[in-house]
Image (cartoon, rainbow, N blue to C red; front, side, top):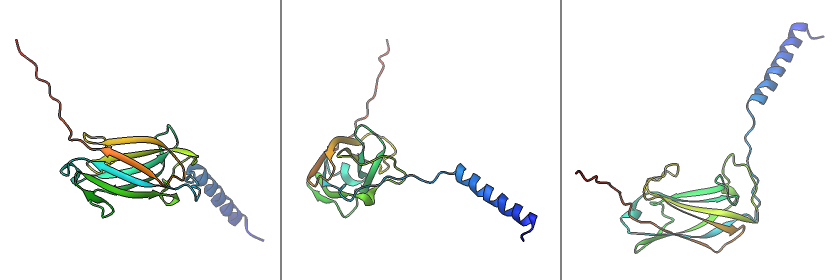
Length: 163
């Protein structure tokens, strides 16, 4: 028969494990159906000097929501880009492998596609030259085309006139 101190030790360890589980919830992720695929072409239009660096990303969000359920990003230097005169083209496909870790939600029949160009390559910042487009797309669409016009950021200044 086990001794009382041993039973007490097992009981204390069990209670501690339960308390730890209650303090740290397990991560929640979405389940993306196999047919939730988005394919198409992203076209960046702009002077080649502007399109020398940065990144582009495509995210899939519930309609009207800002948190992505799926997302993918490409550096401008990535070999996936086809470079032409004053434009860059990328054929993309997003599927369940691009599910955003920790995202909560479900993929519906229609979702928002958010395409973004970020000149410094960090989508968390919003500096001059960042461009974003958002449109509703059908889940499973294989013929998407997103065009982003990238312009030269213009600095605005103010001169006060003295009297």
